[in-house]
Image 1: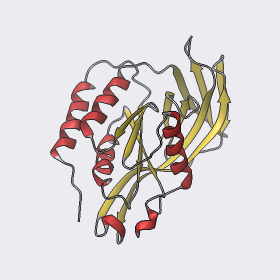
Image 2: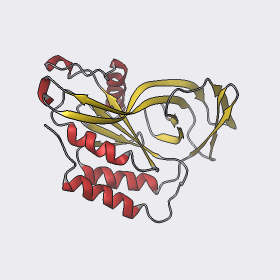
Image 3: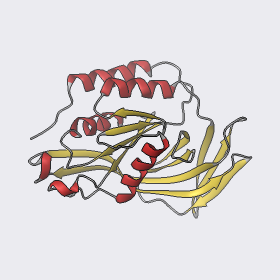
Image 4: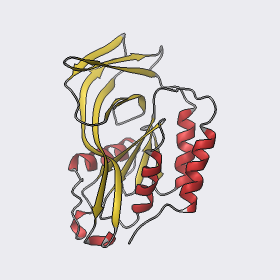
Length: 236
């Protein structure tokens, strides 16, 4: 069983390509899209396919967070982490919501959408493209690792979290149980770890050095809550 990209998904990606052809508010920092997904969720494959298309775009950073609350139905997701379930619950609490679900996408830390609704996802990404990031994030390789510098624009809200995210670019998985039994799935940007490396009040320039990062990753500056993602930079 396979889940090819639908015509709607293709149309959404085409719309993103066309709308992104002109000038953007922020050329250097990608729009972060978090997908809460599970190998055991029957409605997730279209959202997973959309993530694979988004991963081809330089100005979008899709991050797949596999949750563990579908594991009980017969197929434990080996990428799942209770910490990602906790993060999704924290997003729900911050928004005054009582339930969580998959597939859910969070765009820029602030906009929520069902992850399979490709056109809505495309519209939200475009809206974030056109909004400047309040925090500039610069990364510099050093002999000891990675130097991180974050600088906020005037008027940026106080208290922020500096976070280090690492992920696996691609994994192909044969699913032999649960709702997606028989499927062969290609997952992208599978988050391995999400760590807060600093707290910042937004004054001056926040600077720190982190050890060498294995594989691709990103530095994200986010309001607590979790709230809006104010700045982002890839680690290639």
